[in-house]
Amino acid sequence: MGIIARQTIKGSIANYLGVAIGFVTTFFVLTDCLTAEEIGLTRILVDAAMLFSSLAMLGTSSSIVRFFPYFKEADGSDHGFFAWAMLLPLVGFVIFAVLFFVGHDTIVRIYSERSALFTNYVFWLLPLTFFALYMSVFEASANVLMRIAIPKFVREVFVRLCNLVSYLLYGHGIVSLDMFVVLFCSSYALAALVDFVYLMMLGKISFCIDRSFMTPALAKNILSYTLLVTVIGITSNVQIFNSLFIGAKGGLQLAGIYTIAAYIANVIGVPSRSLMAISGPVMAQTIKDNDTVALNRLVQNVSLHQLLVASLLYFFILINLDALYSVIPHGAEYAGGISVVLILGLNNILAQAFSPVGTVLSFSRSYAYSLPFSLLMSATAIVLNLTLIPVMGVSGAAAASLGATLVYYAAMLTFVWVRLGVGVFSWRQMRVIGIMAVLVVMYLLWSWLLSPLVGHVLIDAVLRTVVLGVVALWLVLRFKVSDDVNKLIVKFVPLLRRWQR
Image (cartoon, rainbow, N blue to C red; front, side, top):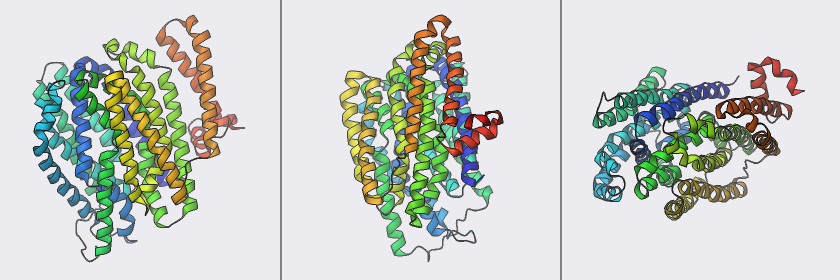
């Protein structure tokens, strides 16, 4: 098993362990210990920090992946590459801090009417942005060293456990709301510290800068790429725009409802985090080697697996939504987000299937063309958010994401195929669509014929999940959607080997 497969599996284990913790936390602790307004507060704090860290990042995370192949040597030296990777975001954070203080009054004015609670804690965006910024930098540094498992564990498990503690302490009246916000933000500080210590322990990080290696031509290339990726990073955070728009236009309570629904839908994207993290550096190396055939094969393979997993996750989430909302505390209060799950789920499937092409464009010599696509996506999202949220509420925000994603990838896929000769489509993807069609028909028949006989919503959910899960496994194996997936299934469940025949 190659390093990509090993690190992807380890990273996915961390991701899904985090999902399990997040599931319990979100649906049985968060909804019980915090009000919808307070959930909205935590969501807007984190989303705003992520957006601002995209500004302060100055494109460093993408630059680390794209340019590390040019710095690394066969003997393991990197000419002080990681020192540059640590310094540039610090400059970006100083710029952000200045802009934050200049725009503070405007932020307060926008949110004061419907989200007054957020304005009480707006200054916590500064440290939270700093911690989120360097978490991303340390993760990207680990990615290019082909070590994604520990940083994934830190982000997906460690942070969630720390947050869980803060929720419980506040929910049981042990700490005040002010102290809760302090603990919540400290989770990200501890995570950044753990990531840094791990990088040092790898023994492959050098802070000794080789100035002679940084030629004017290379420096110009890095800076131009960095500035471009900075703009793209700011403009492409569509789902972050959603929560910020909801908080400003609808208030923190609606933002809380959206948070719960978005968490469910975002489970669909969990597997791709590990796969893209480890395949990104391989794509960068393939692009550097100008191997279009290998690049196409890699892109189509990544796209196929992400489409398969995302589609199956979406299906099993949908058939259990009624059961899920029936068991969470105050579920009726959050049930208005069911439509958000449906819409954002479709959006996430498209994003997972097509995202490898975006990665290719950002790492290629034509990376500058990423900017107009990101601007198009951002403009579409803003217009749709402003238009749909007042009419449709949280569903409007989800619809804005889906509309922006469709426009963005329709334009980008066409361009990358014409310009670079790289595409994501293959006939194997049609097998995935066919399998999903069969599963949907079977679910509809089950709901029509068997659900009334079973009666109890939870028992019905368990039965249909088990039966349809077995059917889905058989269809994937029988129609050989992916040799890699078949081998993985048979490896862990040898009794299913005969299903491949």
